[in-house]
Length: 521
Length: 115
Figure 1 (cartoon, rainbow over the protein chains, first blue to last red):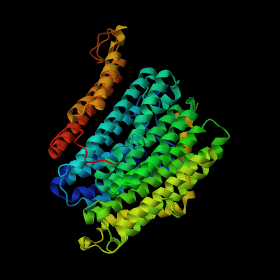
Figure 2 (cartoon, rainbow over the protein chains, first blue to last red):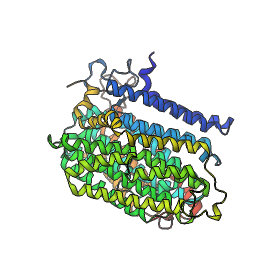
Figure 3 (cartoon, rainbow over the protein chains, first blue to last red):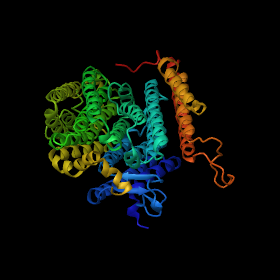
Figure 4 (cartoon, rainbow over the protein chains, first blue to last red):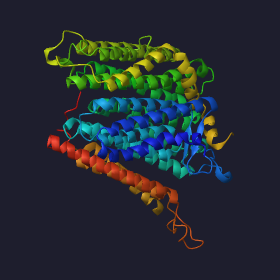
């Protein structure tokens, strides 16, 4: 048996298995679950990188469950696939890499952050399940399988958001909101799956993409799926759950939740590009996505400026940054049918939008972790009662500056690289959009200057005399993120060429996506 | 016409569920609304695979020459019912936690997070 063929499933199987072993380990030793979970996610990260290298060098990978050979997509000469298939192209593995990095660092950070609380074994097993759900959503090529993983991720994340529910009411409230939102989205996706299955008798994305006729029912399915997936991704006007869930979850979980919302965003792109693509009225749908994006950008940032709770402020910024991704990809979608505009600026806009997904996961993760570090030492999230923390938390201060500069799009950090791609290309599509994006960026900077001033600057406050630097595992997780941010900021061309460009291409070329499973046409 | 009845029931289920979510202010009722939507989606899947005068898709037990209903939607529905059980249990347990801290299930009063 050649194990390297089975890498795609091992990425998921390993955390899934460990998630159910961890409660047993927790009975033996109280500290073991955390270390075990971190190691598992580390191994999963290595597998993801190996698969990514394979995808970059040898093209998209498939993994067929239960077949004689893992690449046998069409057994005994069938015209359509019958088994559950993992289809890993450049876009899937791009998202998979984000998930892997973020969940590994989240677990590492949790080692110290969550140490003092009870129910650690449950915490880590839910964390692993959440990771499994996200990986599954991103790697699967089967639409019902996608629904199952979506539900796994939602259930795990709800339990994690209300992890502090027994002690306080707010986490339970936030968890309830998120549960309602994610159940509705999952059920509507299930309904859409029913519509597809009733018409075409297949559940495979690739086969559906080939068979789809864009009938009235398909339009209904699209109209059902786009809003609910955008809701799960936290775009305005369905963003009401985002600030609550992000601010009440423990900090490392918030970081992973950002990546989980992006998994829904990935699904949105998968549906609009790989499933419908040019059969779609791309200009209209593109503009709808652009308008969603603009609203998210603007409402997110204006709501963020008035916040006093540091994590709530950052959560509103997460909404605003999601707008950039929607803007970039929306412009790409709007000119998808235009053979002149697409290579001229449409592709660059898509690259910017997709690159921003990864950058956002990194710097927003870093910012949430610094907020968690402040909470860990001061016990408050209220910006008005913080102050002078730069004296005692030097490393956290540096990491915060890096994160804030990256989110505001200052060079040489990664936010600058992707925002520049978006500004440049969107300007050629419609100058006004680009100007709004820049204004939002300035407002973002303003709001982070405020946070920096009120939390870190000023004289040392007497109530925080005992405050020290956070434990080593937390510093390490933040340092790794900062290094990646600076690396991406200094060498964006390496990332764009090797990861982002193939990802954008795999979204644009619909026929290639179905050809991976169904053979060349 | 009569074969469309299941789909009409689906519409009724889902619209009742959405109505409950939008207009009811009790957390338990919201949970019931979610259940209604879920039942609607499940019924939709099952109705898709239905065939008149067909038997259950147990291959070895079906009489020869007898038509069977489509098994895939049933498998899908079974999965979705199991997931729905987990969802409902979680929604209700979170509602219990909310009740413990707020002393009420009224959504107008469970509003510490705002702005």
